[in-house]
Length: 200
Image (cartoon, rainbow, N blue to C red; front, side, top):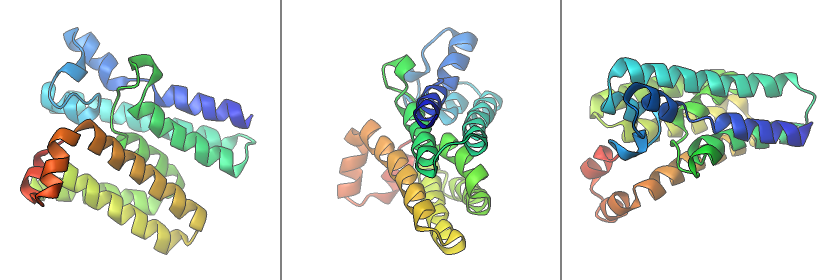
């Protein structure tokens, strides 16, 4: 059952919501538009805010279903954490799209909302507020991830949960870096915070 859950989580996580939505709406590949990311934020920018919100909601529900399924199956704790992590990897590197998908923020949000509800909720608010104030989704995500990890460590007081949360954050961070490395790495080297903030 452990292996089945891990595979199930990857395959469900790989379901490319943004790609499917944009294909039906525009008959185009969302990865050829905007930031090239197959995610809710790029749908918002390439189409409209309502479409972006709908894709975000579906991705959240996808992630929530994976977490709830894992909690209700007779699987080991390690299988649950590996499975939920594989769901994020699946979203970012989906087998259905030759491993080029989203960046994992919505899936991490949905999973952590079920497992570490309070830290996840506060992190979500932080992302929204910082993104609005700085007009930078990237800085919002960075601050939200920081808050999520700190609160998980302080409130949950579980090394396992804290390590799991850190791994999810690292996966999202590395995906952002590798997808936009040509823009991000020079900006980071020059400590150009304004330019970094503009890179999705």
